Amino acid sequence: MTTNKLAQSDSTPADLQSPGQPQGRQGLVKPLRTLLDTSGLIAIFVVLFVALSVFIPDFLTGRNMVGLLLSVTLIGTIATTMMMVLALGEVDLSVASIVAFAGVVAAVVTSTSGSVVIGVLGGVVAGGAVGAFNGFVVARFGINSLIATLAAMEFVRGLAYITSGGDAVMITVPGFFDLGSASFLGLTLPVWTMIVCFVIFGVLLNMTAFGRNVLATGGNPEAAALAGVNVRRLKIIVFGLQGVVAGIAGVLLTSRMGLGDPNTSMGLELAVISACVLGGVALSGGVASITGVLVGVLIMGCVQNAMGLLNVPTFYQYLVRGAILLLAVMFDRWKQTRRQRA
Image (cartoon, rainbow, N blue to C red; front, top):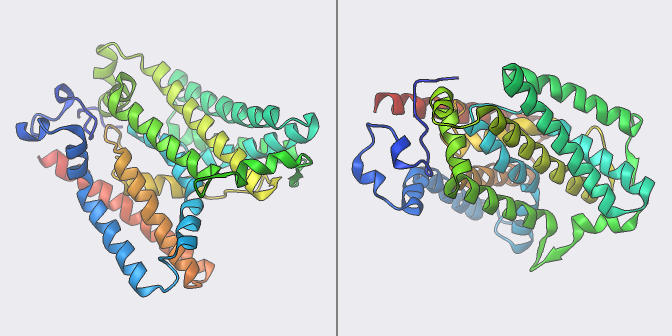
């Protein structure tokens, strides 16, 4: 991880910004500065959305728009905390396994206890425990988060299979299904959960000392530690939050499917990271924008939705998603080079 740069983002305070940044830019209010930083991405999304609306007959319909929002809830919800992990200069490859494990735990506990509340809490606590464990391993032993969470991805998926007995777990409590189908103002609970996560973590990143510490640590962990930031504790908290949110997403997904499936969400972690990087979150840490992540999630959702409407074969969809990930990483590298030259 690069250690000779300072944290920069739409929420970075002036005393942590790059010396090469124009003074006038620092004086802008945060919403305007965020708009300027993400205007290019927003323009791409607007052009894409208009093009899809014009050339795909069924794209711009109320039913499809609701379906589009529902289709991005899993990626969007988890992206809000993956943004924090990446801004910290780390990465979490275990989120897909946590989603599966939390869902299986919620299904087993709900069916065993007969209580939806206990089942939901069990799933969320299971996700949070895995996330906190990841953070502890990374922070306490200094293990590269890529390797640590890659290992976690395997053993947590194994825990999901062991907990479920190697097969999907049917849920015997009808009330559990209401979690995925309950709606308010025409939007289901998973959509509202995603919206709430974007609001909470947007505020956390932009308006709190916690968010500033995350960005400062991602940009220069040594300087952050010297400034009094407890870097180890911060990493454990951020990974723990990632686990909790992945657990919530897993419980909601299980409710929508009607069963706890240990095979679910394969490859989800790459889609989440792609959305974050596409939204301007630097893989090297220190740079993040909640607005950019939201737009990145919507771009990926629109592309996926359009391919579904056009009946694009699944194997071609893999090619498109891989190309998006590659382009996102190349774009991130280009931005890093530009910042270093500034």
